[in-house]
Length: 193
Image (tube, rainbow, N blue to C red):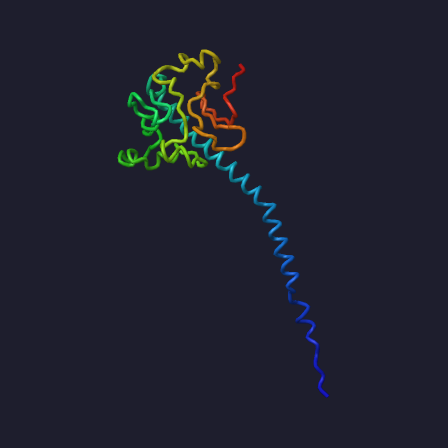
């Protein structure tokens, strides 16, 4: 008489369909929990990249003012709002940003335009070729002669560039480059002295 051995050891190591579905459900649940955290990290990284671009633009503005008797560029707030056909702030600052690039690369925007784009901007940049408003009241005058400096008496309260749109969600928060070179994330310019 032949005895058949039970193949229970092979059966014990295999997954049943129910166990597999439970594992898939747990994985889906973990992904569902983690996705908002990943989205928040991505938003924060875009905001940080935008602030970094503004900091670099702040250095370019400082170089420009140093070479122009402490006067800021006379440029329109946005390229599309340019009734006097002035050079844009991008054109004025490109030679201070594009160190090491050829004149052809600067003219085509290679290596320069990336700094003028907030990574969260998919609306304004394609039209304007910049993601930032320029405070054109600064144009061709020292900071101490501007209206906002007269009000605040503090260059850390006078904006130079800021987000042209609400790129960072919430209650209209914007990244601001101030005349002292600082960059901050505010819902509006701080008005109390």
